[in-house]
Length: 583
Image (cartoon, rainbow, N blue to C red; front, side, top):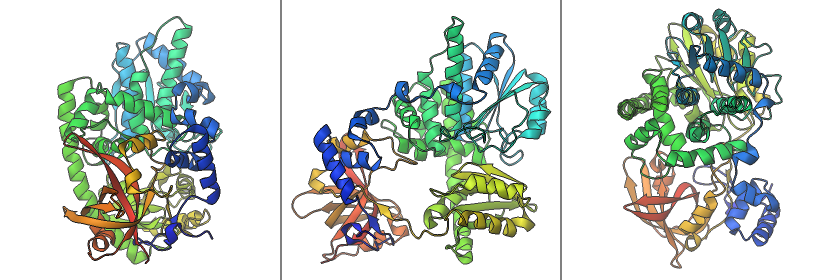
């Protein structure tokens, strides 16, 4: 085993620090020399597997270079041709979408494109509680009576009976959830995670699949001598969906999010402008803002309010309607947080009693709101570094959400347990899944799921090691350096933001913010000093340790950011971990 970085074998949060290897250090120094890039940025590129000759292309990802040919996906040409035929002949089109950010963004993409063509489709979002996820027979039959084409986005791949019920109306499915051995009787099923696909594009979210279809539609229009609507202006929706659906920020996803953030910064989409304003977002958006500021608010309607609020917000072109919807979603998000906190406390207590060292951590409770079980499952996963399932029970039926850890395919395991009859239904993708289970089968279903996950190594990890990109001194950290580091972004799932250590730091001016947060300054004793913030520090050991006083020095680890306040930009460390410096 390699030596722990800064000899931190057991930090204040119980983690072992892992730094770059000697070989990675050598490659980073060579890259910095050959490319004239700052050494900290070169370290990040080396960690991403980027060669010196590829560095500039990686730092400036373009859709021209990275966007795949839409026709690589099966059924794509047929889906685009049928959609275009409906547009040219003014047929009635319905968009059936999931109630989360990816579904809402996917629907908004189609609606915006159709609006530019002078058409307004019907939007249908199922109610999370009354209808559940995906197409259902009554809804599809009702839509079929009044429409010539139904486009299902972010859902439908496993909906055999509901799709059949829509006959004779044509159904096109644009999805990314894991498929089964057979596909529903739709005219086209475009899904990079169909079992007969290569899986090379399996990291795309549904909104990206929809975007690719619109690329193909525009291509078919050009072949006929016509011009389709501008697609670049839609990338803000693709970026929001990609980050909020926790799709890995690799390959073309990097370019989609990078370009989408630029589009969003123009503040041209009324719904996102209103949502940014109500969330008090007063700076150019980043991937962090998509995932933790805007995304949760869009999701709030589907979780605990009216299911269609998020999609309506993203698709409206009316400023007043956008502002009203944004206000409502913001209120619902506050309510959602309160509900989530109650369920999280109960679920964590139950999971701890059951034991947190099994391959699967799970909890089930009567009356737990189905709209927050997914968020709580994510919290359990983060706390234990294990796949987690949280189930809300009502009238003998449990509806649950599951979240996974890297390297463990949760969706496939949930789908197998459903095929074996222990779940009423279940499916998803590698990192997230949903399920429905009879109350009297929960124990058996969770035991079987735990067994399948154990075979993938889910129970072997302790607290996750903390991986660091190198060591910095406070005096070397400037806004210009952070701007350089941001060129390696966007950061998120599959592309974590760089994390650096500061060795033997003095803590000065610690002050508690609210109930759980901590602000302080860190210095090296030689004049170098930067500010730091530790969110949730007093929920764990960091807050008490860093405020205990005395002459103790600490090794500190976290992510660097620019804190914009009062018209000034200042460097700030977002602290994640600490260890007492020896000696």
